[in-house]
Image (tube, rainbow, N blue to C red; front, side, top):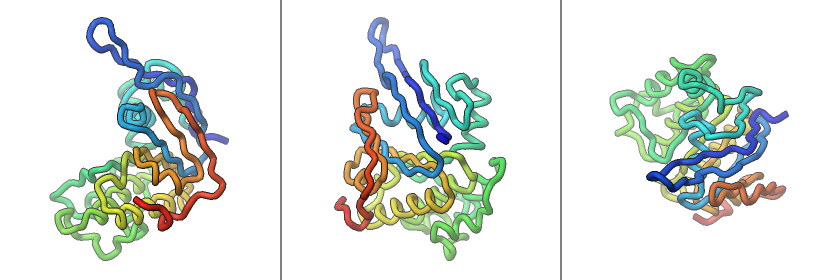
Length: 234
């Protein structure tokens, strides 16, 4: 049974007194628990708007976004804040770690606001940072910082993990490792993971790819034979 149902989702912006921008123009799809999905689109296609609405950082103009049966479109600001805190994990292109906190402290801080979190130390070990728990962000490589950011999102035990260009600031080898990690975590924890990117190569490794253009889902592809991460060129 889908844990995410999106029906005819629209987001319009007024520009000036007459022009209206349709950032999302009737988006519909279902997502099953544990799916790893790549949302692919060029700049301005609507993918970041969709991610912001799914993450409770913006509200749709109309339509439905059902997360575990509740219509998030109808949420007020307080309920959206609760949604972000309890049910959504975010991973961004830039790590946004607290520079004066260690890796463990960054992850523990995220766990402290969650309803049913995982153990912070164990989560960092799960993303391959057993020996870096007490290092500050300035003492970590870019790939290690992104692993801390993933652990920070995962420790909340979220229903949905949203990743916005998670490999965009990394070299190809490190980016491949992070992508493999996200796929592994989706499988191990049965978490729904949505990766938003403009990089078409990343789409080759996903079993499901949604292409978005002009605020619409123009393709929803199920790939029975995705490539392995080490088979794609960046």
